[in-house]
Length: 200
Image (tube, rainbow, N blue to C red; front, side, top):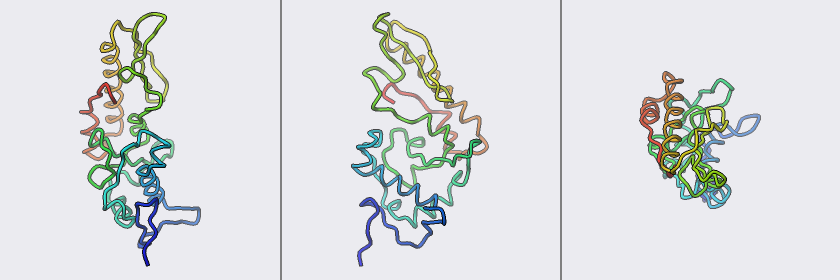
């Protein structure tokens, strides 16, 4: 009998637990959410996942379950009790493939620093908007609490972007240093060396 695919992609061969008394296991929930992001429906719902795919190994729930339990940070929670997030593009910037080589678990505050808001992006560099009443470019960036911080007005778009870039990279490094002893070394190195580009 042919197994029914989960979201048309994943194979759950039932070798590993996928439910608990109160619902799905954390492993299964993460796996389902990952698969959904790789479907047309998921990408229509959130355009930042457009083009995302999943590796053959990650299509197997058993493989994914066992992989999770070998990963740095899988069982961790942040100070607010939130479980760490599965991330696919910190190790490889711009990555669209969910796989055993590209995914890691990171704290929620770090994951949120890389959330893309494609729907609200304007025509200018990231972090930059045009002030029509002043005929100048404004730079702003969300801080670690999600509050937008005003970074100044500039005569040209590139200068405004540089202000954003400097602030954002500082935030990322600060977040990395804040949990240095908890992070996978690969994640820490990627964060402290991360370079913001105008199209992020």
